Amino acid sequence: MSVKQESVIDQIKSTYDVYKIREDFPILKTRIRNKPLCYFDNAATTQKPQQVLDIVDNYYTSMNSNIHRGVHYLSNLATDAYEDARKKVKSFINAASEKEIIFTKGTTEGINLVANSFGRKFLKEGDEIIISNMEHHSNIVPWQFLCNEKKAKLKIIPIDDRGAIIFDEFLKLVSDRTKLISVVYISNSLGTVNPVKEIIEIAHKYNIPVLLDAAQTVNHRPVNVEELDCDFLAFSGHKLYGPTGIGVLYGKEKLLEAMSPFMGGGDMISKVTFEETTFNELPFKFEAGTSNIAGAIGLGAAIDYVSSIGMEKIAAHEASLLEYATQRLKEVPGLKIIGNAKYKSGVISFIFYNIHPHDVGTLLDYEGIAIRTGHHCTQPVMERYNIPATSRASFGLYNTIEEVDILVDALKKVIEVFNA
Amino acid sequence: MLDPELRDLYQEVILDHNKSPRNFKKLETANRTAEGYNPLCGDKIDIFIDVEDGVVKNISFQGSGCAISKASASLMSTIVKGKTVEEAKSLFEKFHNLITGKLDENASIEELGKLAVLAGVKEFPVRVKCASLAWHTMLTALKNENKTVTTE
Image (cartoon, rainbow over all chains, first blue to last red; front, top):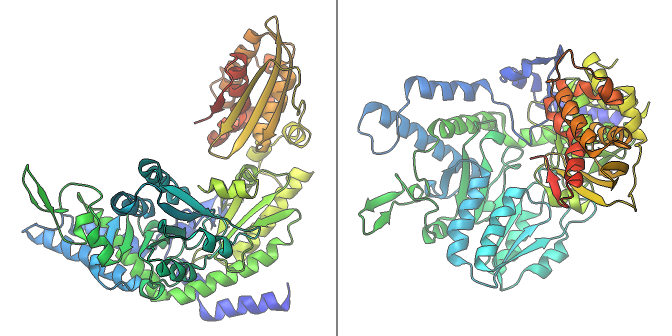
């Protein structure tokens, strides 16, 4: 191990007690075939700390009730807890108002909401929407639906061999025909951190709103919507150490006001007659039906949890893990990392020329290591690099240097089996 | 040391067929072809068959996939060659029962020959599709339906 690597480890250990943090996550004590679980599938979903589990349990045990309009004690308790969670989200991303925080079931619903409510209202034939080559399918398919319906065009920002978007090509795509730009902040399959602030600045010169897919961002670094000046931002609770089935769409109040509701139903209305319906105010206009109340409250607890550690510290810890792992994976013969952008988050996608990711995944599973194999819902990325799939290790706030060592040793064993 | 269950899955024969797949080429004389696709893992396979008088005279494949899917395709190509279309179909039925653990204990696996090395797949339900992709694709080709098969 180099002196530099040792200093990296020392730095992590001195400022961040990862072993104490791990105590908060009961599932991390799991043993798989008598080996300790090394959970490196955090880009798919993260594990939940006891603090989140307790809050969700407490909601169902002592508070369960439907929110808003209830006149009884429990309903008031639940409503307060649900709205309190919204306040936490607002502070967490530094939104201007709680009206800008819409609870969804996840990032996918947030993007679909914008495609339906903004896109269907403001898009015309011949208009264009810009996305990038590294989008998750959830930031491709909704726009295809919309473009097909409106006879609009989907424009794609190309990416280079290292996995970064080609900014000059982006500049060429922006025009008066562009009605929306929707890009991923951090790529789930490449780990690339996109220059979203620069993209937003350019877009705003043309008065084009920008939607950021922040599913892989809010859990890894501080996000400040005011500073970014993004118009929409979507993320999921379950990747932020919270429950599944809850997510957030942030939108600037002015834009949300101008948009029509996405779904019709209870809670989103102000007055209903058979002739017409007037809609409720923001954010309730976009929250038809009974929300995932426990999920929202759990997300609030998850935000409290990561905030108590500090997003900057989490980012630094994961950056050190990324640096250490990238370095150590060089020891594994034949391993090629896909995604080598200058600015990267804690995601490492890799391939072997003669070993399929599925086989890597199965062999690692027997070492207690959870990674993801496949196209990671980013088939255009796989096509771009002419590969069927990758293996992906993605880091979370509880991963350790020792776990990276276990991964590297296990990969060396995989090679022995296949190259024997 | 490799776990015994893993060793059952990745037997030497499988690793060998993965490394040096048999009949891995395009068959110019093919009169039946089909494309198979497993959207879950991106595995793709093209099957080429030359059928004459109801007999598989020659068969080959191309594509990319995991060791299980590649070895299964390679083994299939060696065992099906020379068999009648009906024999190939009944072989698949037996093979499918083998990898899903539904094969009658008393059933003879002699007919399956080297295919028996894929029995370890039954302990790995998510890999059944890998092992059966080539077979599904072959059946489609034999039906002379020139279309893409998916495992989903």
